[in-house]
Length: 122
Image 1 (cartoon, rainbow, N blue to C red):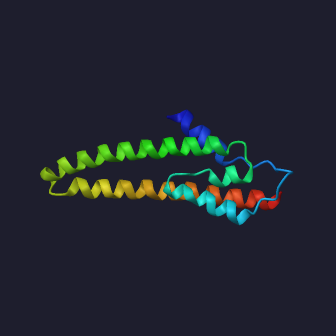
Image 2: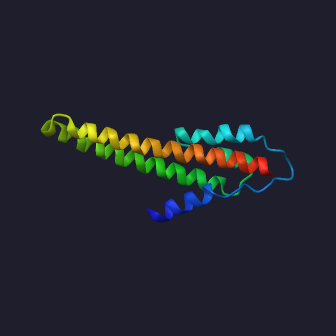
Image 3: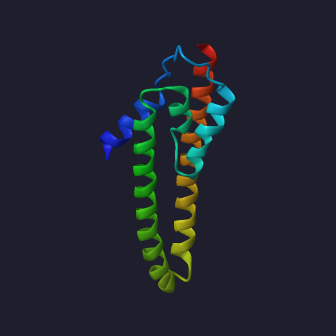
């Protein structure tokens, strides 16, 4: 799990290399990068010509699938436990999912902002 996190963070912090054949609109790259909120982070980097864009996309898809899988398992456990705790485990599960959602949004928005700034500096 740690190599996945390291490679994703390393790819997100890289500045895209300039492409001499076309001019890249930073606003379009920013909007495409925000598609990470629905599971496809890295589209803006691919559009910008970043060689790590496909790596970011594949790592983000793996991360989202892992989060969905473990959230599903957590929901089933919380649902079964809610019969004993009168819904307390569902409340705890909901709080945990909320924190995970905030983290996913933070990663996506910070990646989009760093991409936007990186393209404007070129």
